[in-house]
Length: 323
Image (tube, rainbow, N blue to C red; front, side, top):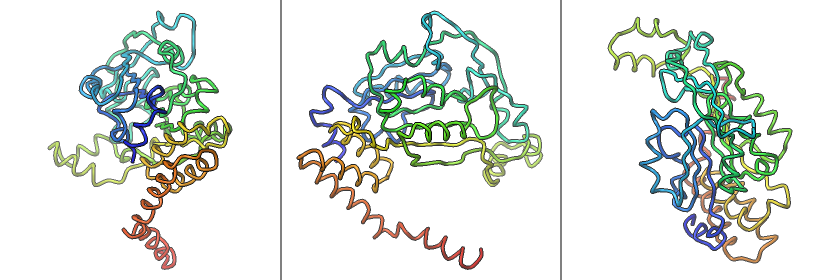
């Protein structure tokens, strides 16, 4: 169904646009179903784990890559300015902001944030990068910038940010970097703007045990990992996914409704996908929306017949029994 939708004329001239900030590692798993139809703009200043840009480029309709610091403030000389960038033991923890491993020294993952060196790297504002590419609308905004997620989203500008269909953030709960954007600030900002609703909020983290105490169980790496994976994680940061409310009439174009349904379906938000089909059918006489509604209803019934409700039943019983 996704292939059928994204093969339509609406996406020939205006393909889905994906922004990936902190693009270390590999292709975002959630994008695999539609990457071949999409334009991706990937940023990462730490190129020690930027291999997916080359290995995955063939999976996108078009891929732009920027190996430099992407910043929030938009300045006239953004193309020539440089700034300090902190390289850490893990390339996934490097940041424009100064890491503070001393603030998380009682967590097992603290060594990953140890600064190795400070380098001067070129900076480029997110807004100027998009302007240069003549990108007007971002459809899926994904950022793991190690402390600057909210300021980057805000740098899209009011219009671009309001029209984002899906936005993913990974802000901190505990303090790890100096002056970082925190989860509560993302919640407040998105609530105040009112253009998006929070579809997912997953606490992530690390066991609260010092690396020295962890080593005291065993020096064998494999045994040490078994101990680590046996401990309960503490909430240190959060993975947040927002979907556009489609409350603004300017959002209710055929292209946006089609793509909004694709994204909601990808995220298994089949109830919201069904809502979008109703909004679409009120405005457009196109049989594709009947097909989409049928597909969403099938997905919901599949969950019912697959006992998708059972975890909630167990929770109710546990509550009744006082467990």
